[in-house]
Length: 313
Ligand SMILES: NC(=O)C1=CN([C@@H]2O[C@H](COP(=O)(O)OP(=O)(O)OC[C@H]3O[C@@H](n4cnc5c(N)ncnc54)[C@H](O)[C@@H]3O)[C@@H](O)[C@H]2O)C=CC1
Ligand SMILES: O=C(O)C(=O)Cc1ccc(O)cc1
Image (tube, rainbow, N blue to C red):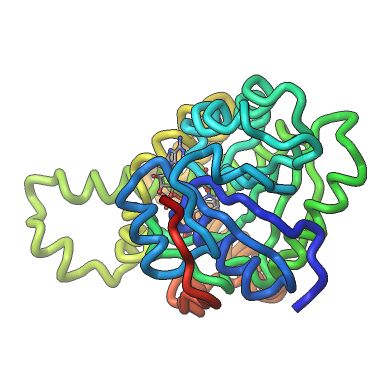
């Protein structure tokens, strides 16, 4: 346990990310009290049952009443509504953050709804294809990158406290401009998800290959895509709509590269294919050498709950 940069944390949205933030903060930071809130009453009830937070609040007002940090863990398209719901109740001096997968649109949404708040956006690059309150686990962020995208002129003390918060949850922190973040994540995360959604849809729509053949022979690469394509539809719809420009830019580059490979296959250009595959294999090997290999989806999924929560009336 480490000393906590914040002591009263409100987590808004109690799915995979919110649940994991709440569990990790309670497990790793001494003296922290975590209050959780979710717009869905069934999620609040389940979160209380499995002990995600010290208290599950019944309203946004109760959730943030005495918070020194509020972390929005809702889909990026819901950030504006979630922030508007707490706006009248946000304590003075409270720092606001989030975990959204795209950053420029989220910064704008939070800034518009909370014009007087100190906002330090964050994106823990850690997750799984699971969603909902049962999906969270306390070790999700251990050893993973968390990218902070503070706006120009952000309060340096608040940025340092949010960085310390994520380090306290076990993450490694990097600073980035929001627009650059959105471009980098478009190619490393958003496009791979789009490709997975596409290929799984393509395979299941084929007339000449049966569903049972797709399932039976999925070990040949397809299976890895099906895990990613099982990711939450609401979350990913929002990512593509809210990081539209960066995704379209990267999709254009990808399409051109795909056409090059298509041409090499059509022309029987084995050397071009071999060179390309050799280059991509080296990238995979350097990721593993850096200790970034992600065999984690089935790793460490204990809830790590530390106390029985109460639900206020
Ligand atoms: N799933 C992943 O692997 C990762 C997700 N993220 C980001 O984290 C955020 C949350 O994603 P997950 O936890 O995976 O989603 P989730 O679907 O597991 O949880 C989201 C929760 O937000 C609640 N919610 C929606 N609108 C709300 C509102 N207005 N007020 C309060 N609660 C509201 C929902 O009821 C749901 O329980 C998203 O912005 C996503 O882009 C970031 C890193 C990884
Ligand atoms: O499960 C996977 O493979 C992921 O890619 C998880 C993930 C999803 C969204 C993010 O913004 C960050 C990480």
